[in-house]
Length: 173
Image 1 (tube, one colour):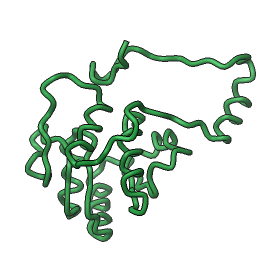
Image 2 (image 1 turned 60 degrees about the vertical axis):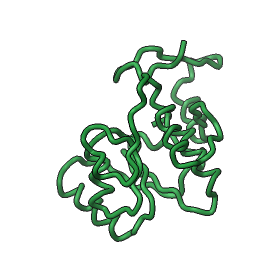
Image 3 (image 1 turned 180 degrees about the vertical axis):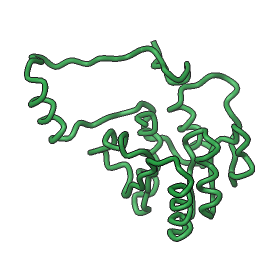
Image 4 (image 1 turned 45 degrees about the vertical axis):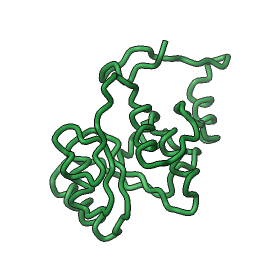
């Protein structure tokens, strides 16, 4: 999720007058609090068929002009395809290229997930504004941390250098 922040920042900067909506899992959306990268959020927490069809119906009703598929799943592209989103952009991997109006080829070399997202911007002719992921701690989150972790006496930063889902999500050395 955090790897999408440079992508979303560029979309926001390019078209501040356009609404940018995000669709994703509620449990991860708090990571974007305070960044102002999108206007509205559609929770997509359930994997069952009824919920999926409800999202399809919602997308058809909202009549989105453009949808950008960041996850590489078949289901993510299918949602926009069945939801009648006019322009559907993403990588054509996992047998989903036929559902996209603009299917990008997978990079030949191994690149970080954030860079893959930025290459979607390049394909759309959208200027990159930042290249690195960013987070912002809200005042409520800061106060909540201070109340919960009273034993922490100094500022600190921790980086986890491994990758659970493969080398594309590893931070550079």
